Length: 391
Image 1 (tube, rainbow, N blue to C red):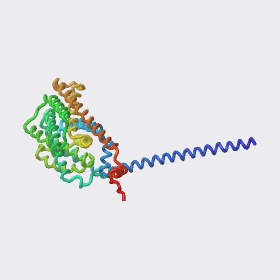
Image 2: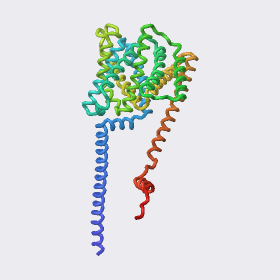
Image 3: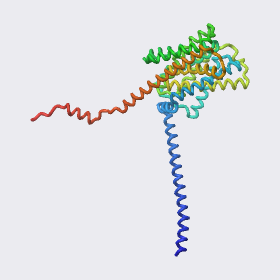
């Protein structure tokens, strides 16, 4: 009897352990299957989101908020300054319009690869955005980018920044004329402090000639309109940055080809195209694509005025960083201007955050406010109904 119990206990423990292993293995398989199904559902949902312009716009807002977009744009902008200095300085490629044309051509090729791989987000329906708007944006972008590089060639960085200050009031006036968009008095004061600070910081580096001054003046209006259109089409028409770049880049390339004989010097084809120079130019072109993309993301997440303030912040950081890290001596006047500009930028950012918070609270209150139900309306109708008369 004892032997039988021992044998039964042995088989029970053996098969019981095996059953537990099988159950745990099946449980792991089921968990893995559920995780795989969940991952597949997530992929399919993201894919379905990207197949519509509204969904792609929501994904862009979800993964690239204002802070991420502006940080991305700031880092790429500093990088392309070094890249363009390498190309125009050490390499000696002094053809600004041709360099801009190479940037946009490489961007067009990369976007075509994205489209072939089905990575490019879907554009909104053609009825929502007329072709004239896209054509105008592509043309304005060519003038803004080409004239900016030409201005940098013929003027000093300080004079270029002084011209950039005029973009801020141009944007404010243009947005008021086109969209009746008003700006608060406190923001106007903050932008005034920023402009005065940047002017004081760069006043010691004002080297220019007549041709360069004319180019810088002609650049102001296209630059302002370019930023306004990029911001408006993304925020109002459900465009994403990449989809808008895909539609407008061919138009920009066409206008750059038309501008190149007028603004570039002769001798571009006789340039020394060795592997080292080609690698430097292509590296600058990749940074140019990232700059265009990050700038479009920043304009879609914030506004045209905030993007200009970000550019002024970049200038102040470069000047202050050179003073602190590399012992450069821009002068006490320039340092005071940098500090004043950074103070104005901080105030402007705080005002923007306050307005965003107030708008979010208004939207939440509107969503949470109780709506009149059908029963309430029926009761009110019954209360106001005439009393039945006795027969």
